[in-house]
Image 1 (tube, rainbow, N blue to C red):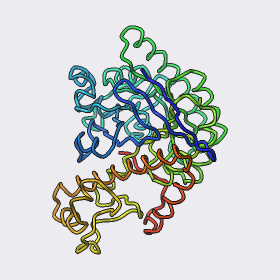
Image 2: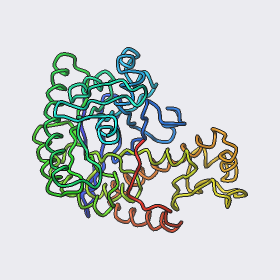
Image 3: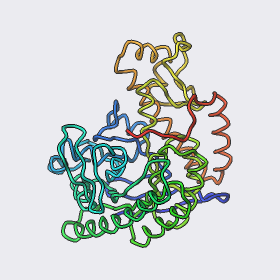
Image 4: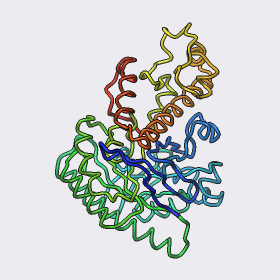
Length: 388
């Protein structure tokens, strides 16, 4: 069973809150999915994730295909059994690697021939193969294979990628339906639209993908180097054609401001490595902006990472102690920082959902950003999120 139940809408924007019902769990939306690239969110156990309020995770098809292999995971009870996670899981298609491993692959309409970054072995990833692998992984949501282009790219390059994404979406859907007829698994399939920051290509791709008919819709190819302003401009035509009764997933966007603005445009699901990657390197998100806990100014700071946070790291440890852990390379430092950052994002989503239910989203957004910005602007510009 898979459906989105919209429960409340913001009267001043396209924001909405609801319940995404999946085979393993019901997920309150808008929702943020921590990234478990290789079947784990680095430095955190599934208990940590549950305690932080996480209801849905993302795992990476490409990496799990290479190691330990989708057949092994299937034989171990699928990703849920393998990880010991009873919440919802979404697996991406491997499409990001189509772009990021440009020096290790060749691309045709048939699929992507690539060499493993682990051992150099050659593989062919087709839309059908991506679906087969994701069926074996057994996630609640699989995603169609797509082609995204780097930013910036030329109009002809973006247009060609849009065409290939649409053709691959049809093939992905055909293979998914074939598997579902022969061995029903209760899995849902999301289509992906592309188009970089070109509004007319964004709208055209979204309309074509909707015409194929999927259980939900992902918006890909953003957060790859473009500005927040360019992303916002592209997001409008990408969301407008999407059905009201289907989940909308913006891939890879992770800064709080960008999440809030995307929710305002009607997006329901997010993922990003940003919270945990930054945390492992000593930078955490707090209600007053980002905090680089490794900095010397926190050497004698008795305060928690975020005085407003209720996570185990903030309830039990000081900034001085967490800084010390990083200074001496103790693994507990990245663990505590990661725990806090995941909880920060889940608390953000909880506040957003509560404000939408109460009809106060605009006021919540303003109050959150006023406070977040008051702690000082980040050293690097927001809007460019890395991929793990």
